Length: 341
View (tube, rainbow, N blue to C red):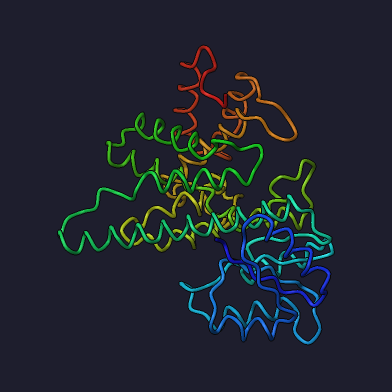
């Protein structure tokens, strides 16, 4: 049974949240202040904390900051902020402090349940990945030989959970991984290298765990503040994958798949061959899948338009070598089967 702690100075909000969650077989504990929460977690470890931002004495931001200071990273409890406002500045500050998401008040029961369940599942998947890494590392030390790789099932499950945050990217990570492997094999990678870039492709968007669903799924144009939140996902992904010690290159795809060959990308503004080769491959694969998949604002683009865009991006957005390989793949795909179905 999942255990949720709800922290809000408004009794009505505590009752409403408690009723919604309890009716779906969740254990709920209610607290009225940040001070009470900090005392409570000294002896208790719930699965998730729902934390109100505006509270007397100590607001949600200060409470979360103190909570993070008193707990080692491996014991951190995921936090979702409760807010009555659409405030991009507050969302940015909350994410910087380590909040996983935001839920608006008054609560919509289905939204509250989905956000809570998705966040708990994503955190568990991340911890499963870290646990798998530790297990494999121990095997390396005992057997004194190279590990074949992480559990592909765990990585694929995590990738599917990431894609599930976005209504319009079902299967995106798996397709990007497969396109990246195809490009790398045509370029000359051996089986082991191609498998490694496939893993990088599966996890290239892992940092979206830290981006609010409302921003990811917004059907219209993003505000500057919302786009700034989206642009944080490469750095978030890199931090998550730094724990994979026996595959130090795994974070390459997550951190640098939005760099541009002309140096105008993010997060680090790298250019040309300063961008790791694997990231240059994944960048082409990622853009191709974005154009050949349905989105909230458009349908799949025609194959001719996709080809024109890849051609136009050679030397600016894309490494010309890997763009040319993708163009060859497009030209061989006579029935336009290489796209979302």
